[in-house]
Image 1 (tube, one colour):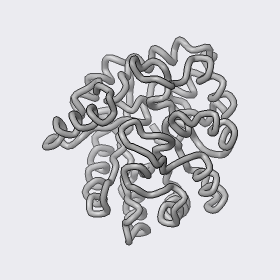
Image 2 (cartoon, rainbow, N blue to C red):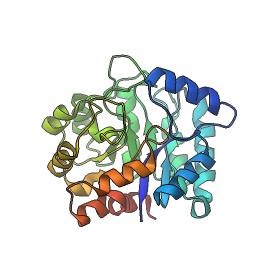
Image 3 (cartoon, rainbow, N blue to C red):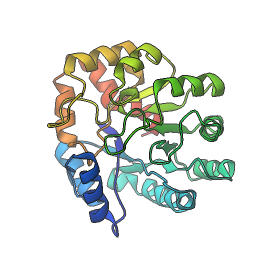
Image 4 (cartoon, one colour):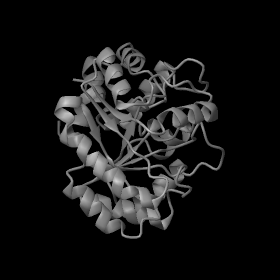
Length: 273
């Protein structure tokens, strides 16, 4: 089994415009058309069994609809292979009620994107969400490090994560992009070995034309320094090709047991599939 724990699709009405804008801002060409159908075609080519959708709420008013659609996606996951986390925004005033509803929907976690939500991860609003979500057993996927399509400042750095860990005591964080895109030395120094997960999305040099990515040697070193049991396979599709990412990981110097844990074993425990 292969599980991609980090993917995105966009609403049909805006998908073409959204993909064009993101391609321009990031300088990166999308590898699918950004639709669910496009993702499923990519999964079939790559031999991926499940992909986790990570919706980003850019305003508090979007949250309820995002979570309703996430629940609908999960209801048909056995047929489509598409699972979803819920979404929340730091400005969500009734965040406790929203998180309880996420739990009632059967969703396994939520997504925060501090850059798109213009909120530093160590802001009290994020800490409250992390603490409440953790108490409900929900995982919190967080964009970490630089965002290729957005200017400074970086809203989730390793020192922000340290502060959140210490103040909330959470063991439910999943840091995207191997803990902090292009901040991997800081990740190793501050976060490696801590009780959190890292995902591999858009972090390795399998993606042509993107500088500063982790090489095979660098990736294996960081993954082992952190702990293989806490590393999850993700692609950031459509911004990475799923098949290319699977093939790249299969060719690393990791053992077969380590590859299995990253490609699905660790994620199965989170997603219960």
